[in-house]
Structures are given as C-alpha cells and as structure tokens.
Image: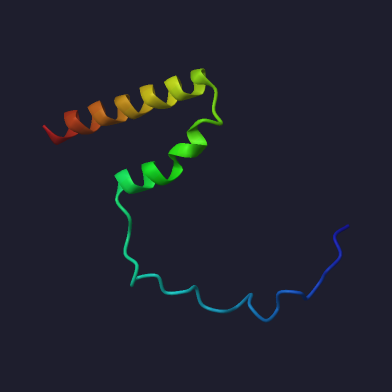
Length: 65
C-alpha cells in the first residue's frame, strides 16, 4: 500500500502559472524543438509517423474543400 506523505501540500492547490506572456509556439517551432528526440525512434517508427502526418494533412485538405 502507498504511504501518504504531505511533501507537496504547500503547492498542490496553487493556481497554474500564467504563461500567456510567452504565447504559443508555432507547430514548426515545436517540431524543431523536439526533432532531436526523433533520432531515438527506429526508422520504421519514423516512417509510420510520416505516413500518419501525410494522411492527416490530406484528410484536412479534403475537409477544407
């Protein structure tokens, strides 16, 4: 059974930090930020991801028409 601790009682009910000053990053910037982690995937996983991305892009284009 898990032991109850009170280590985080001081922060658990605090409001979430306001990050509106920063603004959201673009999809391109997010992709660039996490591109290094793509090297951790196998080539098959990268191909699967690319195929899913292409499928979603084509589906979005079809829905826009």
